[in-house]
Length: 427
Ligand SMILES: NC(=O)C1=CN([C@@H]2O[C@H](COP(=O)(O)OP(=O)(O)OC[C@H]3O[C@@H](n4cnc5c(N)ncnc54)[C@H](OP(=O)(O)O)[C@@H]3O)[C@@H](O)[C@H]2O)C=CC1
Ligand SMILES: O=C(O)CCC(=O)C(=O)O
Image (cartoon, rainbow, N blue to C red; front, side, top):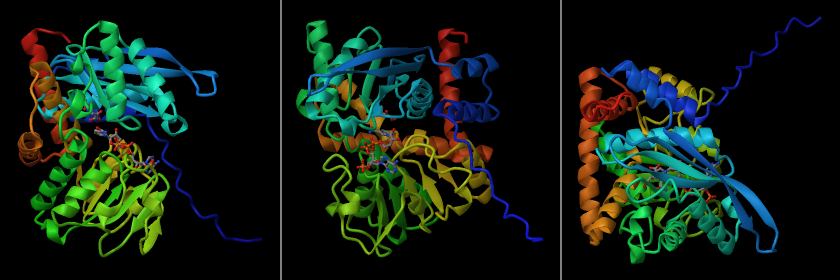
C-alpha cells in the first residue's frame, strides 16, 4: 500500500463580479473615513440601471437581439459619466461595479461628474463596420430617455472607440433635431471631440507610473515595465513610458505577450486600434502567455486589458516592485490584500487611468462653450490635474498610513459625502 499523500492543491479563487469587488473595496475604505453609515450604504447601490434590447440587422439580413445596459450610480457631484463597453461579458452587475468606480474616479480627479457605465453584451470582433454602426445607432435610440449632456454623458471603453461615439452622437442629435456634441465624449475632433482624448487614459497611467517610480526612489531611465493589453490604455502608456526613457520589456494582446529583456521597440508595434491582435505577430526574442507577463520580474507592472487578472492564485507570484492599474478592476479584493501584506504597492485604477475621463471633461467643456483647445493645452491641463490628484492621494497614504487604493477612496468619499451633506441629500 502506498503511503504517499496526494499533493495538496490550493482551491482556485472564485472570482467576484465588479459589483462585489467595488462593494468590498468601499466597505474597507469606509473604515478609514468619517462618513455617515447611511451614505456608505446608499453608495453600495446604483440610482438606476436601464436595460434595453438592441435589435441588429446582420449584413445577411437576419436579425439578432442583444442586451444593452446603462448603470447610473451617483450624480451628487454632477451628471453621470462613464464609458460604453462592447464585450461578451458585459452584464448588469459588471456595469454597476464599473459605474461605482467612475463615481470615485471623478471625485478623486475633482471633476463635476458622477459615475455611470454601460455597454452591450456582444463580441465586437464579430461585427462588420456596418453592423457596428447599426447596433450603436439603435443603442443610442434605446438610451435616449436616460442620457443627455446635462444628465448622463457616455464615452468609449473596451470595444468602442471614437467612431462609435460619432455614430452615437449623430443618432442622438437626429432624435433631438439639433447637433448636440456634448452628449458623448471621446468623439473625433472634427465633430467636437478633444485632441488627446484617445491617448489620455494611457497618458495618465504613464504619468502616475512615472510619479510612483520617483516616489519609491528610482529613475525612469533605469526602470523596466511590463504591460498587459495594447489598446487605448496599454499601448499609449507603453509608448509614453518608452519615450520618457523606461525599458518596456513586454506587451501583450489577447493572444499572449512578446518579451525582450533589453526593451522592445514599442513605437513599431501597432495598437489594438490600428490593428487588433497585432502584438503577437511582431518579431521578438521570446513570447509569453498573458499569465506569464503578469509574473515578470520588472519594476512596474501595468495590467491594462481586462478585470480580475491579478487574483489570490497569482498574487504571490507577482514579482514587480509596483503595480499601476491601467485597466478597471484588474486586481481582486483577495489579491489586493496579499499584495499589501507582501509590501507590493498597487496604485489603483481610479487614479491611474483617470486621464480618460479627465480629458472627457475637457471635451465636454469645449463642446458646451463651442471652443477648441490645442493638444498642448489639453496635455498641460491633464498633467496638472494628474499631479494634483497624485498629491492628494499621496498625502492620505502618508498621513494615515493607507494603501494607495484606500487613500484614493478616502479622497473620493470625503468629497462625495461633503457634497451630499451640503446639498442636504440624505442619504
Ligand atoms: N478606453 C478608455 O477610455 C478607458 C479604458 N479603461 C479600461 O482599460 C482597459 C482596457 O481598455 P481599452 O484600452 O480601452 O481597450 P481596447 O479595446 O482599446 O484594448 C484592449 C486591449 O486588451 C487586449 N485584450 C483583450 N482581451 C484580453 C485578454 N483576455 N487578455 C489579455 N489582453 C486582452 C486587446 O487585445 P487584441 O488587440 O488582441 O484584441 C487589446 O490589446 C479596460 O479595463 C477599460 O475599462 C480605463 C479608462 C479609460
Ligand atoms: O471618459 C469617460 O467618460 C469615461 C472613461 C471610462 O469609462 C473609464 O475611465 O473607465
